[in-house]
Image (cartoon, rainbow, N blue to C red):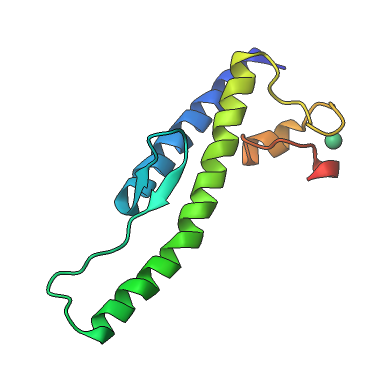
Amino acid sequence: MNPELQKELKQKLEERKTNIEKELQYFATKNKTGDNWDTNFPVEENCDDIECEEDEVEEYENLLPVEHSLELQLKDINIALEKIANSKYGKCEVCDADIDEERLRAIPEARTCTKHK
Ligand SMILES: [Zn+2]
């Protein structure tokens, strides 16, 4: 792979990683054991009636899928960064073909070619 392009995409990946981690920090806590995140249960001040408690549960349930999707993106980004470190970046995980430059520019953490997405 073109080293200039790889350098550019690595920068993009690191930027996205920082942004996603920042976003997660608003409502989740990083697990001590690894790269997993846990959604924090929102605590509202002076919440002492049922209605307010229901709001908290609802908010929590809305945050869970957001946390999950950010965590998955983060995992793919970490995998991509690892591949760059091992000079294995830019290959499809299914057929080992080079992933299109256009696809990598759009999704630098892509793990498969256009055919196998
Ligand atoms: Zn493929």
